[in-house]
Image (tube, rainbow, N blue to C red):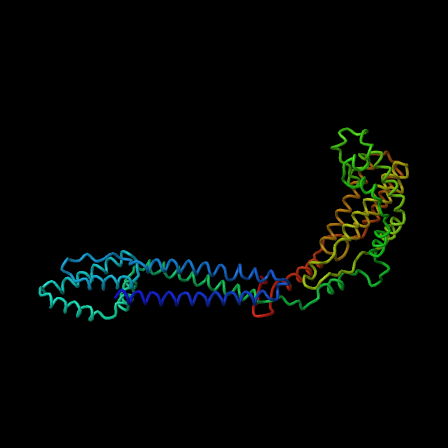
Length: 449
């Protein structure tokens, strides 16, 4: 019986490893097919091996080792029989218990019942020859021990309490749900997003506020940005955050703690800048006169809109260039410093003109259907303009005529303007993101993984 048991065990292990190999190969090729379209280089093959075949092999090998350990040794001890009990009965009961493979407590109960059954049958038989024939007959009457072990296992399972059955079915349901989830994820990953609507085209159709292109301030802003002077390396060092010894060698003696002193032209209050800083900024402002004329023309226009585009159709509107907002903020810094320089010279009319020009630009960026980032940039530009106007009013004593003139110009800019935040164009960007995220192409549909 031991020889038969070993042969059966070997066949089962061989079958188990064959199934494991087939499943691992299936996982490998499925992952390879799913990632063929997404990879541009050879790294996808390594990713497929790492996330496809290696985890499956590790899990299957661990399962095989655990199963081999469990089948290598008997799960139950030899039945405690009398010395006169034939060894064949003990081996038979042991083999049945091994094939039953259930909980230890249940196996002990079944083992005790089988031991009692054989002892009752052999109790009245004393002749050795007769006992040997009876043992063979009893074993033959029981039939196939492997089938007997399965039947005993099923019988004990049917006798389980209700709560045990419910717990077992619950765990089975959880396992089945997990398997279904994995299959569903594989199905989803096979899908591809299909962009059927060109939302950038829709955006460009809704963005214009007028059919007359001459009323658009955007082209003039672009010309103003292009007309900004190119700063020399020395001016760049001064106008950007840097230490004094690096930007102005030999001049650091006039500052306290020169090695730790940091100079930053843009964004710092004009009154807090050093004389060197102010001199460099004045030179830059003089060279930017052409850019200022274009910005004044842009601020005189009633509308602002731009033509949107993207670099690649794969990511759609997520690659739209919003650098224009940063460029306008950078350009406004020149006008702010220009206003302070003119105010120092006593030309308050021109100073407030530069600040109100920036305020108009911010108002244009907020008016009408705009992307949310453009509206927020316009709010920021307006806030900075108002802040600089307040600082100038606090610093200088202006006449009543100058104050009245400033108030009138500020009121005219805001009269009849609706600058409430709108999400009309921002919703279009969300729609484009949805169609490039949710999949309906290929085998799978749903969210693109």
